[in-house]
View (tube, rainbow, N blue to C red):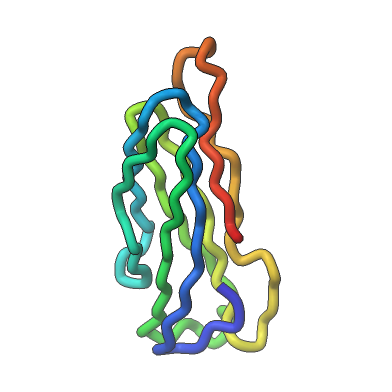
Length: 122
């Protein structure tokens, strides 16, 4: 999230893709639930299905005058893996174009399945 001002809402969208040959349910939870609202905290993805989730940020408390950037974690859990993505918040006056790090999530499943879960930030 870039150029963030206190008491204003900001939205980013992430896209989750299931590359497994079986359906999977994902639970998504922010490390700071007071700052974020998710369009879905739980989603079911069929095999090779892709869905988007909106993440809304609203800072309601002042930060330290020296704090121009910070980060939060979004935990993603399923029966097969536990992973996370990192959201970076850059306050007004501090610019960065990569606000969300989107790793490839690798399920902890049988090696013969050889699958990955992709998180994409448009």
